[in-house]
Amino acid sequence: MAMTTRPGNQRTDTRSLLGFRRQPGRLALFVFRLPLPLYRVGLGWLFLGRTFLVLTHVGRTTGQPHATAAMVLAENKATGEAVICSVWGARADWIRNLRAGPALRVQIGRESFVPQHRFLSDEEAFAVGVEFRRRHPWRVRLIQRVLGVDLHSDAAMRDYFSTRPFVGLRPVEPLGSTQERR
Image 1 (cartoon, rainbow, N blue to C red):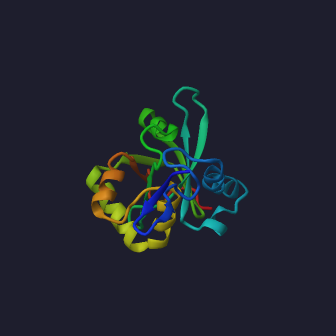
Image 2 (image 1 turned 120 degrees about the vertical axis):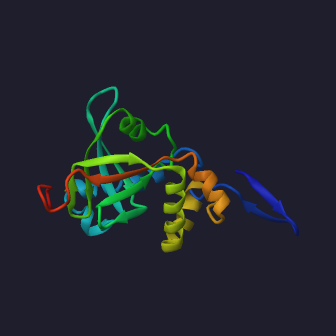
């Protein structure tokens, strides 16, 4: 366990809450994967609202569909675009799958749609992060503890987000036209 000594011999634990920094631990994986079974049994909207979405994408090597749950950092009600981030970085399988091909489906709340996706620029990602920090300070504190990162300053946030892809997912067709409503 990493420890630091502060003036006055105060020792503090510098590890993150769950003991990992770059890769998810078992408890984190359980928590992050919890939305999937809730959505599969039709309870995602009830327990998670629009906080998480489930993204279904095609495996780049297997060609098989895979589902990933992600926290929604921003949502544009006018366009239906939801923005998510890969906290594990650009090498996460779902990011690599989206770079290789299109997403198949997004479930958010009671809605389900065929998405088009785009990767946000660094400036767009930073703006989303700043707004998320302003609107959800307790979630940011939890994320900082779980991931062992500092997102208090704009500089730290810009540095962290520069290595984490942000993805915008919006309906190919406007919701309510031919899209499925659940």
